[in-house]
Amino acid sequence: MKKLMMILVAVAIATATTVAQEGKQPPPPKKSPEERAASITERMTKTLALSVEQQQKVKEMILKREKEREELMAKAKDSREQMEKQMEADFQKILSPEQFEKYKKKKEEMKKKREEKRMPPDAEEGAAPPPPPAPEKK
Image (tube, rainbow, N blue to C red; front, side, top):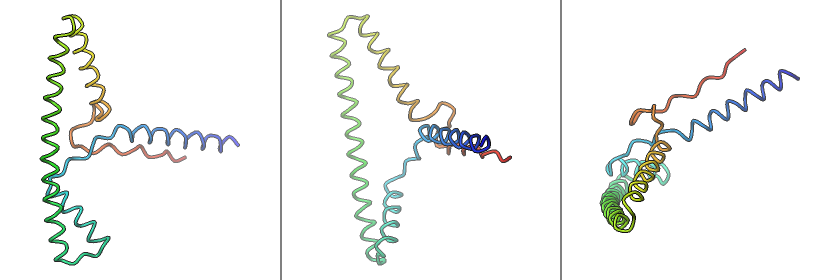
């Protein structure tokens, strides 16, 4: 009975450790539009048994869409940054200097917390997460 209880505890700890590590994995490296188009075309070829001609047409169409999507994302980022700058300028007009400094400090703290959630401080940029520890055998 004690052995069974020890095994259950060990499994629970291993599960909890695995779940905790999953939340701290760095994001996968970003692919270029060409890489995304090739990957999507490859998946579609396997799933739908595309002919060579269909593969070429699908890849061209997807590549065009992916490039347009990338341009839209860049424009959206520029627009968002411009809105944030305008909002900060408006806050500076409304808030006292002390309030504005407190606002900027809090905003920076929140930004750091978001970044920490995305990437643990000990992980390198683009590096794969370490494998989970192997269970001990007795």
